[in-house]
Image (cartoon, rainbow, N blue to C red; front, side, top):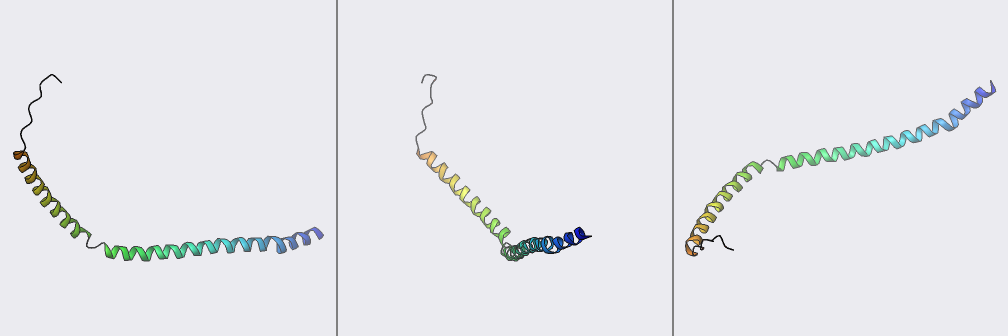
Length: 93
C-alpha cells in the first residue's frame, strides 16, 4: 500500500507537470501555425483580387507581340533586299 501512495505522489508531482508543460508547448506551436495560416489566407484573398485584370493584360501583350512580329518581318525583308546575296559555296572549303 505504501508503494501505491509513492506511485501516486510521483504521478502527481512529476508526470502531470511534465505533461502539462509539453501540452503547453504543443498548443503554442499550434497557435503560431493558426496565425500564420490566417495571414496566408488574408494575403491570398488580397492577391486574388489583384489578379482579375491579368487575362485582359495578356490579350494586350499578345496583340503587341503580333504587331512587333509583323514589323520585324517587314524589317528583315527590307534588309534582305539591301544586302548582296551571298555566293553559293562550292564543295571545296
